[in-house]
Amino acid sequence: GQQLNQSPQSMFIQEGEDVSMNCTSSSIFNTWLWYKQDPGEGPVLLIALYKAGELTSNGRLTAQFGITRKDSFLNISASIPSDVGIYFCAGPRAGGTSYGKLTFGQGTILTVHP
Amino acid sequence: ETGVTQSPTHLIKTRGQQVTLRCSSQSGHNTVSWYQQALGQGPQFIFQYYREEENGRGNFPPRFSGLQFPNYSSELNVNALELDDSALYLCASSLVSGGGETQYFGPGTRLLVL
Image (cartoon, rainbow over all chains, first blue to last red; front, side, top):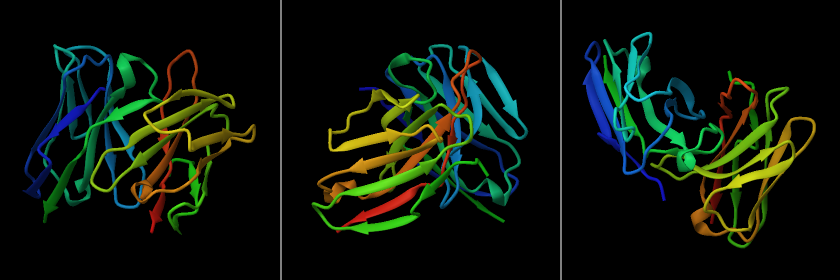
């Protein structure tokens, strides 16, 4: 089945540093989604990408949809303590377009030291 | 605050028992998806309900079943619980329309099977 591989698994950074994480797949995805999950909460959508090569920003977050449609990356600039959490990439199952049936990566755990 | 609530927040069961988890979607959302998130993993798609009918299923056995009601609430039922069913169970609601859909996740129910 479809699998999404995220790297790194975890990151420990100082406040103010920039962060980069990525997600790769052996299958093509038509949409890439990036979520953040805080402790005790469900995932919250950060950025959605719809076209190969697309670069989208949301505040300090920037994400890109890889040209091969098999990868995506997420950058966070000037990290702050509230950026702590688990970041997931996700995409519609079996190359579809329904956001309601998603395949998730295993997550990147981000820790920010003040 | 996503407007999606789940109950109970925590639950302890023993192997072989049955469990019912509940989700209350945002008003007007016609689609609900359920996910299982094991510790340290990304969410895994269980199934989706659209207008009270099952609309897609992940790689989960038939002892995982669901219901969706007209009042925007839904249930996940798991029979014959196994130790590996211990996980965080997330529901996500969305409104499927011509413009696409955005999912909103609830905070989850943490199930422990002993």
